Image (cartoon, rainbow, N blue to C red; front, side):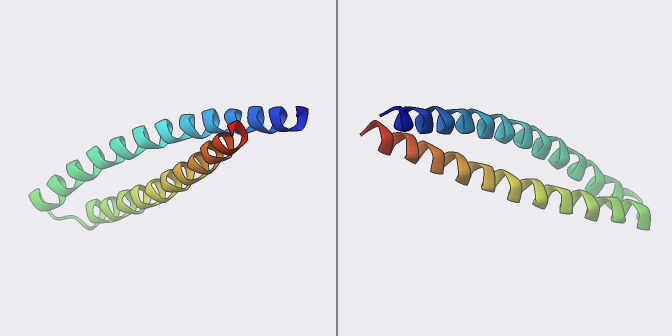
Length: 88
């Protein structure tokens, strides 16, 4: 019984940790998205290869942040399911 409680507590701590990471990544994605929109405006306003390179890099960072966020969500849901099973 003690083992189950420890496992449940450990999973709940992991859930909190993943929620914090999700919030941080969501904020990061929002900031990157705003910068992407601004870069798109700059690229179309006056074409410059450096501006285009910055736009591409921001897009890559956005995709990486999206992938990391989805992995955090997956891990959080896994730990939530562990807690549900342990409650039953």
